[in-house]
Image 1: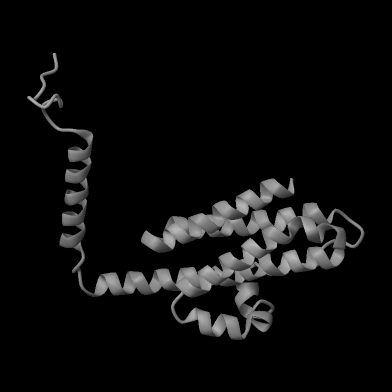
Image 2: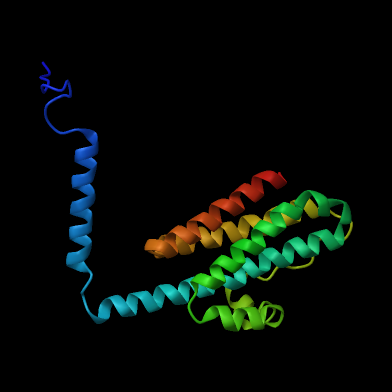
Length: 178
């Protein structure tokens, strides 16, 4: 049986009060663990490095869109919004990767073909001449989405959210290209 207060509201905890209490406990717990010293700095640096390692992966996606449009100009109008979204995702990754933004943006054409891209396996080969350019592009996008998703698992906080969002966006591209 439920009891009511004089104003008609139910007695006990409302959902709003319960959620506010849970949020307060989460903030308290975060505050208690925030000062763990050098371990957090080392973890942050490692995560920054992992995030920066995803730049060549996304650069390869942007290059794949450009190569696909060059190989099949009729595809250009259809994939233009997807290509623009991939470029926006790349800029977000650059902005979030400390120190990588300056080095990547200044050398994106040479960086994507040098050791940065080859070590991640992210450089996109040329689309098949006269072949299924759309299918090739879908494969490139799928591989990049899988790479970002794998990196997301090893990240925390905003880095994980960003990588997850980019991976999910690319999965949407993959579906649109199907």
